[in-house]
Image (tube, rainbow, N blue to C red; front, top):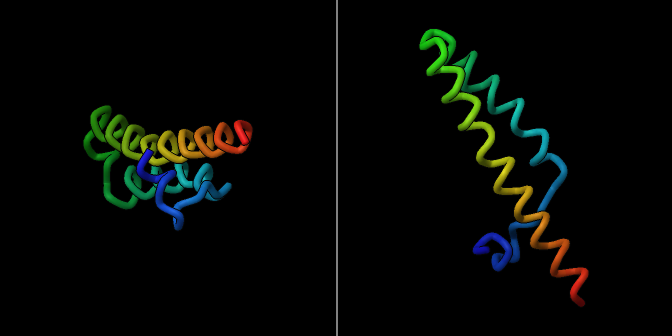
Length: 68
């Protein structure tokens, strides 16, 4: 809800493409694959959180527009 109140934070389509980029960055470049399943899960959950956050922001913005 705080992101919706800040005027400089808006939903952008690029935020949905961020998950695969973050996953590759964490799993490959930060050597998460060396940790096996734990590294995979860490990379997956770490990359999923921002996508979920911005999807919720989009949902809140959409509902705010519809109520006007």
